[in-house]
Image (cartoon, rainbow over all chains, first blue to last red; front, side, top):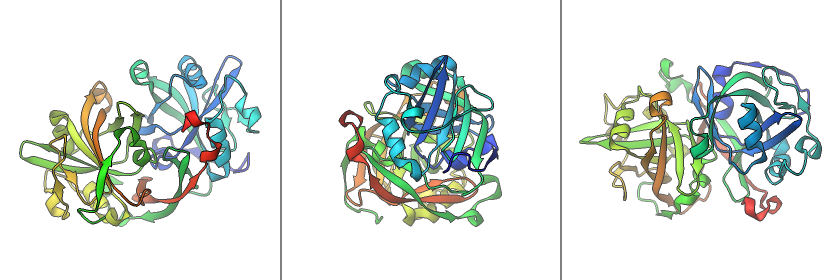
Length: 186
Length: 186
């Protein structure tokens, strides 16, 4: 995905389209003059409206305090073109390097939050912390997606799905069973 | 996956291998003489040890009360051979039919919980409710996987990943970047 590829507003109530299949995402954050990016695989959709995403951000991550204190982040969706960048981001610490600079990524201003978008990603979900009730016990954050942007094509980008042990599954074939769904289940 | 295919104990601390990539799962439950199966796409790994899984079970599902009252379930991993069964289970209600009988599925006794395994699935994660703090507000259950079983092959089964609108992504190619990981990150 070239930086500056055509992107359009995307309805926040439909973020499941990109996140429910379970891709690895890049979470960007900012606080004061600092900014960071982390890889994240532990997340789930929790509600359509408001558009809620629950996720685990381990306390040892440099991003943890940036996100907890700023109460904001951007969830960015990388595609396979960024595989080695995703791995690099997961294996370095924002306490030691500026990951945007180190990995040649573009920090693009967001609309609704101070955390930057990672421009090279396919889609971006600007998030505000909606509930921190489980942060102390499980490092579990519940975010509301307040603004979403996505590249206008492809509709189904090739995403990365982590299985542990350094091994990823790459998203495969798209199949529709729409005709077998009851209308209210779509 | 034929019923009775070779299955072995699987370490509960490694359930991320199957669940972190984000597949649709079948959740089985039992209470008194009742039993049910539901499809679920909103789940995330939350911890390795104890092996915690967080997931949303909407209140309107027949399974909601069975699981909340029994405080147990089994998360079963279907593969593409079960695609139409997965869709059928998601578009019917356990209030009206016995889904095991209706879809010709085998209810196999579990080891640690009273909910049955769905024998035709690739892997099974027996769960006990670990924390219901967010059930009232978000229908969000935190389960501990207390026992896991998985088919001995293939290591990477072809799973279904839901994108909404009746459309699924089928898991694709497996790629390793293990050599680029710091050992402590594996």
